[in-house]
Length: 170
Image 1 (cartoon, rainbow, N blue to C red):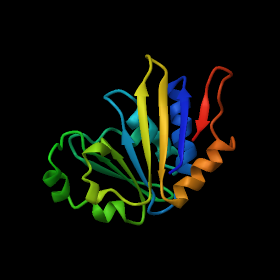
Image 2: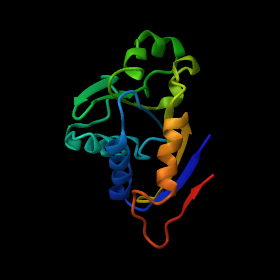
Image 3: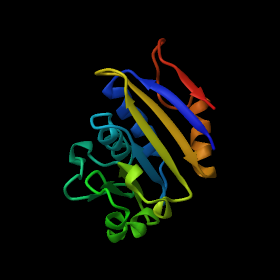
Image 4: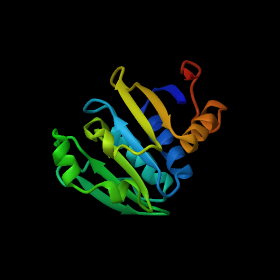
C-alpha cells in the first residue's frame, strides 16, 4: 500500500492538489475523503471537479442531498455521508452503481462507508487541520492504479511546494 504525505500551506494549494488528481482521473476512480469538519474535503473535491472540467463554484457539500452529480470530461458523483451513522442507512442508498460506475466518485466522510462497500481500488484522502491555513494531507492508495498515481506525485510531478513544505512517500 503506497502512502504519500504533504503539507498544504493554503486553500489554493489544496485546490491545486485536487485539480492535479482530477486531471488524471479515469472512469471508475474513487476518492475516499476523511477529516474533521472544515478540514478541506469539499475544497479538495472542488479541485478534482476543476481537473474534470467542471466549474468548482457548482460544487458544494451535499450534506443534505447526500449526492450531487456534476458533468465534465467524466461525470463526478459527489457523495457526503456525514449525516449517516448506521451502515444500514448507507447501504440503503444503493451507492454501488456510482462507486463502480462510468464516472469519478468522491465520498466525503468515507469512514461512514461500510467495509463491504469500500472499493478495492481507490484513493483515501485524509485531511487534518494544522492551523487556519495549513492542512496535513495523507493519500493512501488502494490498488495498482492509485499506487501509480502516488508514484507520480512522489517523483515531483504536480503540486508545487514552498521551501518549508514537506513531502514524503512511504
